Length: 359
Image 1 (cartoon, helix red, strand yellow):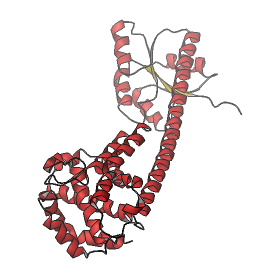
Image 2: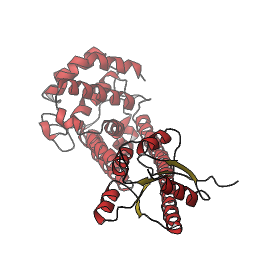
Image 3: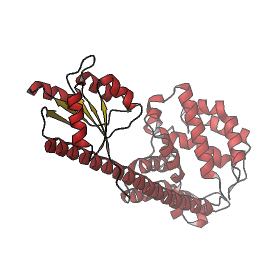
Image 4: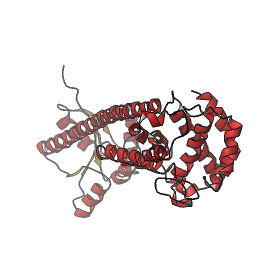
């Protein structure tokens, strides 16, 4: 199949010049001519050129003004322009190039030189388009690969989380529920303009997803403790408490294998601080008040509420009303008072979530 000829529009108010240009180019290109800038714009409505040869000195609208209009129009701005002019001075050439022209050719011109310059610039445009297409293709492949890797990572994390839930004597739903509780609390905090500056700095999708790993350390705790039907001894409870730090250590090891530091930074905070208490009596570090990161203070309410409304090996579920009452009793002792106040306003939403995602 013959290669399609490239299209060139030549504009000059001198018909002798236009005829000369057309005769030089017609064997190599599909040439269109216009005797003024106004006629060029009429022609552009019908023809999509690969290049424009534009005279500078024309009545009504000169070449510089016409070029400015072309470059300001998204439809035409990428068409390469070569000024063809008898104005032989450095300042005029600089002005033309500053307007975005790719070249500046002086009249009278030699036919071989004109052809060579046009061919060179059109070849350059072809290479530029090929590079743009290659870049776009590479970006698409990269996005596809990243999506594939992200899906694999999420699948692995999902399996780990399910294993933790299974070993903890939970048949499922705890992770889904706590994530929804967190979302409800955060949305209400933003509505009430409480802790707004800190929340605004979070990448919400990543933060909520990372909360799945808050109890990952339980994977290292013995089944005899995790699934014990009665109260834990002091020694057993001390062992159980280690799951927070074990979780942080495990997440740090995961973090070293990936560059997704935001996800694992949030995950470490959830794992390491959701058992801290407002009065400093929590673990693993005995943090107090706002020393506890906001993520941990939020997860503390979500995690305890879910434990209260759920059936566990060591207890029967409490009603949503009783569970909400216990959370409120912990205001200023176990939980951030401001967060408990917010919880009060959405406790019915928590109850609905616990039913939707019921085990």
